[in-house]
Image 1 (cartoon, rainbow, N blue to C red):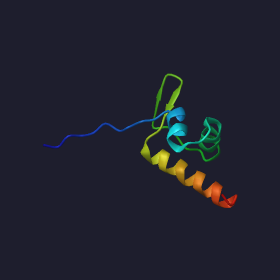
Image 2: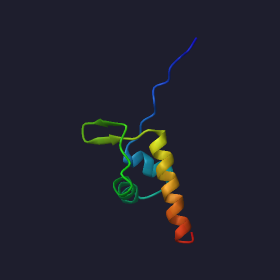
Image 3: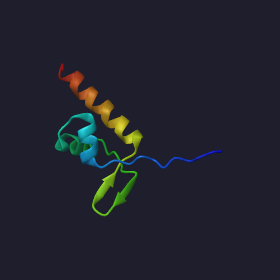
Length: 68
């Protein structure tokens, strides 16, 4: 039996919590790196796991440049 899973979409707040980062830093990266939401729900932007992985990569890149 092939069961198709629904994608797990996250809000900016949930991503910030998951990555242990301030919401403003996540919002900045989304805007600066033109990371597109997978869906919109009202005024909420919802991001898939690929977007979260890209945000994690960008955060690690920033931290490496700063010597953290």
